[in-house]
Image 1 (spheres, one colour):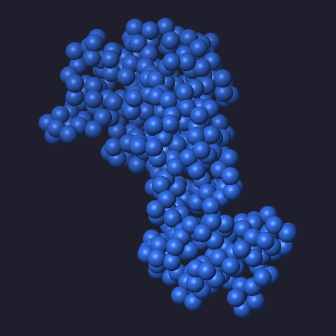
Image 2: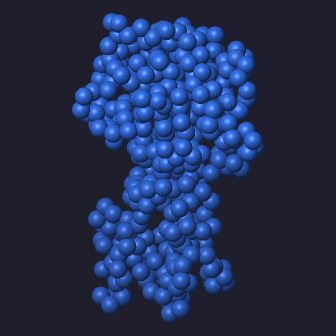
Image 3: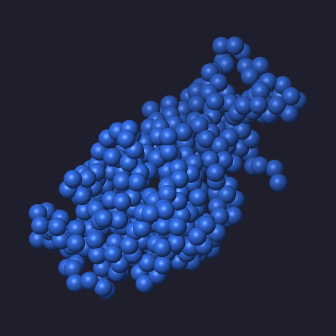
Length: 406
């Protein structure tokens, strides 16, 4: 079906106020800048690139005249000619390349990534868009449709539910930012919006409630740890350290030697790397210290990442792939925090505030928050040692660490 033309009326065009391009069909648009300037533009492909050709200000070029020019330009394009040649030199406006999703996405990430605490998070943004949204890269921002979003989400929506959700959210955020900068019409709905839009078109994802991470039952944790210790890759040691400290994966992956206080058996995670923005002190069990001792080379610098190979930090995916290779398809790295929480609640007599402090959960109650300080560290030291003992004794003899992924 041919695309509609002559969509606007003189009255409708005069009433438009929102910045952006408003289509009359057939490549003709009324362009309104954020400053309120109004002009007619014709959009087409010239030399393989989409361009915007100015036809003149709306105050001096009426709707009928703009349509006449647009019709001549469509005919020129159909005959393989450059439509810009139809305008006198003084009338040719600067050709402005239309922003594509790929170019704007990179610009957007570069403009906001300084505020992201975790450098791995920055790379995950780029990687997820590269792997799952590449089909949008050359598409003009204002031409991305709901069908485009569905086409890239549907293959992974159920099989890679968490990844699909993150990709969708990142695309939505990029398109919202583009609209805020006037690169998309303000009245154009975001095709990547979920609530009230894509939720009607995509199947419900099973077991993907917000904030839920699949966890291993604590009764199975000692057996799993025994199998994990049989793996000699760096990802295995990082996962084991993460489990022993009940840390978030990003906290462990970003740990540096300068954060380790070996004399006092403490790991001090700075506020800049914590979700709650407050320093977190982790008492280290004997098993955790053995892992660090095995990794600590003579030339390690305070700023060096503990779990890195030749300076390259491991990613969450390394541990996720390790779990898959161990046939633990229904378990996530983050879920081990729930394993620890369930064990501590069911199998120990430690008060809630001590357990919550071990998990670095934000505590609103001031009295409970006080347990984070002073003698609470020593009480948590006992808790973390009991957790390590429950998971089984670490046997360093005959267990090496390879600097390769599993």
